[in-house]
Image (cartoon, rainbow, N blue to C red; front, side):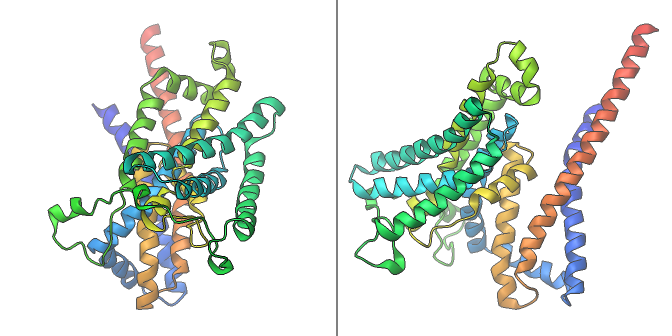
Length: 369
């Protein structure tokens, strides 16, 4: 009983310590900048309690969560898939282009767009996996290069080929027909309150994110493939001796990671803009890597990290309105939380290793006695 309690305390110690440490450092920075930390944090909490802010947070956390799961699949295989950014941009772009080019029945149209996004994301990530398995090129280098190709290629293509009506000021793909719009979950919120407030709609992509999280948990932690994936990431030599082909596992992991990454941009494509244009949300791939690291590749931990980052993003607007602090403090807080969490998790890991060694020594002493 005591060992379970100690394990639980060690499990929650790292995230709690990292958040507290980040808050302390942020308070010091706020005071140095002439702001009152209590006033700043009070404005953030008060703003975060509003229903419309919660809806905004959920809509923001949804792509962050999917992005975090995509990065976590690679991390479980000991692969650093930095290319989530390029994979979701490519998936969203081609999904929007294909979805806007055809008319299908409502449900089939949405499924078609999702399939295109996942396929393109998987293929784009598969290029990095292919380079690693055939040429030994690090996935870090190849995904960085593929990110640059994706972003530069999309911008060039939009500027020349995909203008709608010849308007270069807002070039983009054709608007997707209503049959390709996903339902919203605002009716669910109205069960608890008749007034959602602010005209916000909760995107139905949230359900897709929940399905992705459940599938990730079952695949990684409750299947033979997940065991092989974790074994290959933890000790590839032992896994190879045990009959797990490392190259095949690398390719599958990269394809799965890229397929999930292709879904990151679906909130914009299916719920908001219904097209890919210059207002499309960038940066979600890199933020997802931070969320995965903060959540330690655990689906629940990633969800908490996504909500935390979404809360901080939502707080930046209220700080700008009240003038209690610069909105840049939010970016600093996100960086501090990530940095402190990495340090805290490493500290806890070393404590657990010493505890395991101590328990093993006690067990050996009991056997020899």
